Amino acid sequence: MGVGPVTATKLHGLGITTVGQVAECAETTLVSLLGRASGRHLHALAHNQDPRPVRSRRRRRSIGAQRALGRSPTAFSEIDTSLVALVDRVTRRMRVAGRVGRTVVLRLRFDDFSRATRSYTLPHPTASTQVILDAARGLLAVAAPLIAQRGLTLVGIAVTNLDDGRAIQLTLPFDRHSSDALDAALDEVRLRFGSTAITRAVLLGRGAGLAMPLLPD
Image 1: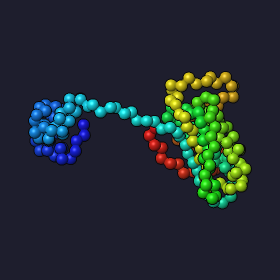
Image 2: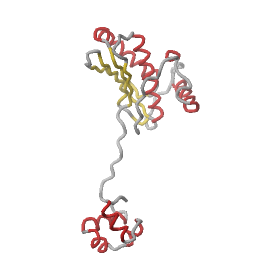
Image 3: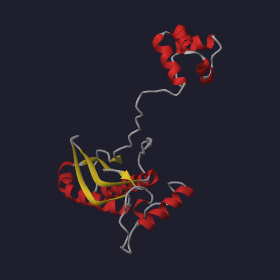
Image 4: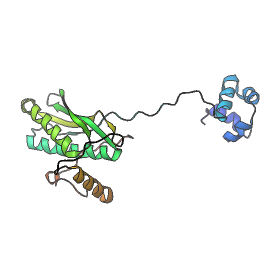
């Protein structure tokens, strides 16, 4: 139960330092000490009476990451490699948070500082690295002519339309080449030995890029 500094000073001056001690005071006593509004409010709170509605914290609507590429010309293969690293990072964060998503969003910034986004909505929510990477690569391929014409200084990926992965009926992995088992194995290795313990072959010898702090989900 939080109180203002003035109210706290008055209560401490009377030797009242706990909620239990406040609850033992009559409402009239608190009103005479603190004023009508503060006294009645504090008395009600001390007796678990709070009319304010409870507002649950809204969970984030998307999880994403981005990477600056610099102003010098970047080969398309290098852009693809950056995309692989970003998707790997984003999907790992999704699985740690127990989230799945349906819409993959590709964000681009060009040499002239203009920006563009491309998006694709999957038929089913997922946190699968391979599924989301395939969708992101498809978006990148569509944007390839524009990138060749205008140059690229930043690439980003985000997954939106998030749901709680534990409350969604996921599709069964009938495909024997499903990557879910691989994702689970990689997550377990990184959990036990650190995020840099294992990586994709295409990312060997490459920096992971600047990772922004992960906000509470």
